[in-house]
Image (cartoon, rainbow, N blue to C red):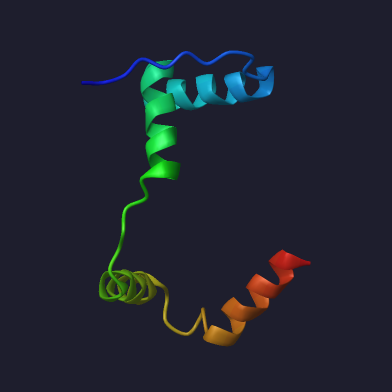
Length: 81
């Protein structure tokens, strides 16, 4: 049986972000909060083979010759600066 949880003293910024996210996803605040909690606390496990297959599929969709491994590595390093 589901349990009821009451949250108190939620910072205004967090409340506003939750409300905006709920609006964006067409969910109630309660449903959005549950989805957020599930995403963090119950992450889906993806087998390495599935993750690799997904990465290969995404790479196959990229224009050939435009995204080389060294370009991707350079972009990652630039993002960390």
